Image: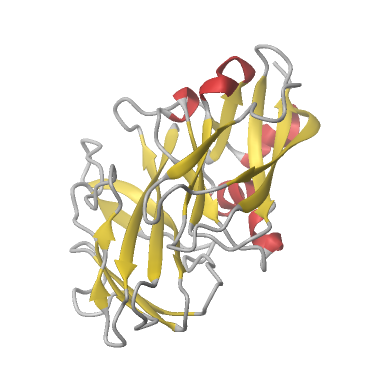
Length: 265
């Protein structure tokens, strides 16, 4: 089975206590991509970067109901995945996702919501994702990408850093699996985008308070979902593979590290 990851982000400014509708971030679509099948994908990640405690509500027609569906409590500066690892939430092709965010009620405060969706057999998608067993058998050695990213504007994907911006020692033309990573400051989401991801964004929560959840982010998803969800980047594409960030209005720089596994051929 081939899988491709994609990220959808929403932003809300000064969310009301009773909730305010989210606006999809520029370049994203709130519609589930069409794969030619009725069940188009699987919602495997959903998290919120909030500035005060509140709630996030996500509705889509194929979900449980159009009243509350998935609604969870948010904690300030704690973007944690709300989709249980062992559970599946099927997504219907072309379903429209709508977000209601309740939060800070503070003028100028920006809060963001992020969904990570896995697509099988996506037309024009990537075949460069592997499962946890393939990683286990092909892992040759580890290397880390340690860098800092600074968003240039709120509520957009920005601050792009090439994979080789500071680490130029990846072995030529070899494949590297991205296992997960850690961040030093709270943000919305950290994303990876390039030729090997079909120019779609594989992402992880930007949460320094829960490193156990992010250090093995992609491998944990692959293990529990029993899908090939670990992105693989060829070193030949490192200059055109970008790390990006969605951040709130504070635009705080985020130190980060990604753990990569060199794969045997």
